Length: 506
Image (cartoon, rainbow, N blue to C red; front, side):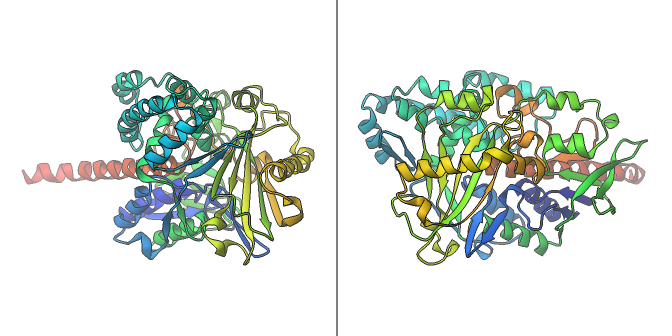
């Protein structure tokens, strides 16, 4: 079959590679001048900055793609483990060096609060149970309520009605340790106080399989997957923005896509790796969408956005690790501001990325490449980023300078930033959300936008806004789900076409 994939993020790339390996002819369209979607790469003044995802977990999802195509990962990209996974820093000066060394974790827990050692052991044990059940569901489609009903007893047993924070807090008493073991939903656009406790499995995932980095940056992994796709015969068109999914008025099936340049490309199946809300509301007329109406989509809850500052320094800050989580003075209050009140707070918690701690080639000799990320409300807030971005940038640099990186402002030699307007206008994300649909219980599994459209039977979705959700494991699993569903459908059609001949032979 002739299959079109809209967008070249990790979800789209995964689906495209798997579908090409099945024997289909896959053509991928990317709006921007480079592949990767949110994993875009910025290069300026001798520095290389990964635009988006930098934390790689579940490495087997990557290796599976190459093995499926009869290739080896190491022939395309070099993956290395990171230790520590993160330094988690608090304003009182305490640092939790988070990795998979159980004895080191327990020693640090005792230093923070001896009474929490036993609590952590019980938390880790409970997390193993969640992982065993939850991760088995990550690459299974939930397209019927029956598929959801089958797992409801397990979800109740695992306390999935609780938030990650509530789940952690029943085991851990020290406020800093509560943050250490509950912040993970923020990495996939969720509020730890609202995201279902199923996401506590991220801790177990990291403990079992580690946190990884692609030498050359996440962009090197994107380039590796694009090379694999093209080696298998797939076609990628850059600078080709899809402006319409063309629907047949009679069959109500997708016939192909139209581009901003006015070209039409026919397709038997369309896979959208674009934002789900954007795909439905901007690419498909509402008359074809009884189930996924504008009203329904607008009534969903969407994740926060991000302010990200990419910068290079003419000196190295060796005290900072590859991944740093910098906790501010407030935790729940700040998250309430971002997710509930949707106001831009004066304080912040930050994720600081220093890839040159692992790969110095990403900056000129003696320099460091960085990005600092601050979660902010999406464009449902009344923040005017055309006037707010610069003072917000200045406040972040001042904070880093005062707390962690002396004389930082004097040593910045290049910089670039993105904000919610970028996510909306450049990445076509509804409300400028950085992670699409928020990962709360009532927007998970069957309740999340489905991997195959209920309105258009040959339209599929891969990416953060569909099941299972955001983050590299989630979006890559969504690509696998889509490829498996299309493969199964193609097999069924083949068997049906053979059925009359078989009867005749009998």
